[in-house]
Length: 335
Image (cartoon, rainbow, N blue to C red; front, side, top):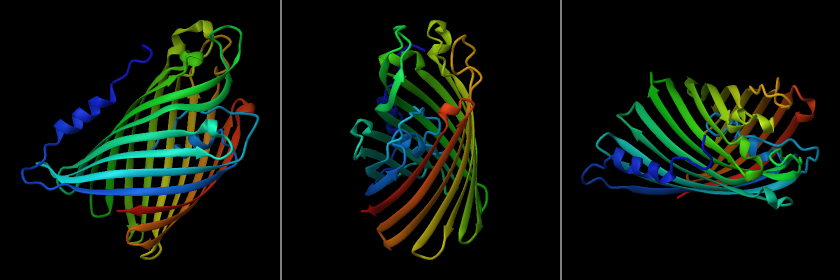
């Protein structure tokens, strides 16, 4: 894979503008969702990776496991602007979202996450979602580089581009099925350029409204990542992998004001390097993550959030094991 060559994000804008043609006389409606979360984490190195370890996010985001495990408080503002309109096919929603993570004690980890997506309905039961996500210059941590041969400690940074397509079909009044496909590029800073990776993901999702007050969702994801390092034996640093992820989620409506959301995810990432001297040879990482969130509707347009998340990763290399706990308190307002 040639470095720094990727499909320009403006191409997605052109697709969205040309694929779904507004109906004549259609009126667009604008709305926005503003959210502020304040989170406490037991390990600042793992926060961004643990946050994205979900079927709908980026569960395979790399992380650096450090001996130091600094606690921190992170401020997470976000704004999602949505344009709803009618097209010749049906309802359409185009949204732009910006999300920030601001660390109180470790500002080197500060980063942004930017997303544009379009969901087009074809009648009441079928929809297609297209999404592009951009995460620039994310600091993973200090790591040992191999390109110079001097094995220097350098900052490891990552810029990610993800494209996602999701086709969803309502099968009955109680059941909905979806299939997703993802393609992405992870581009590292020059000191770790052999780790530049392209990946492909595919997987199904089934959501069942088990009762009038509970919906259960089961998801599976398979992903294959191919790194430049698999062709550069001199660096002995091939981070290519394949990944399996299974997640189970239950959304419970306790009352008209109170919702509970429980989620469990299990992920196994197996590295495929066969390079002599590479520490990835024969290694796999296995992660269990549980999340519980309480959502209280303060008013029709305002929601208060409280969540707890626990991640536990074990590896064939015990030095790379980690545990991380995150507690978050937030508020969301729609206007």
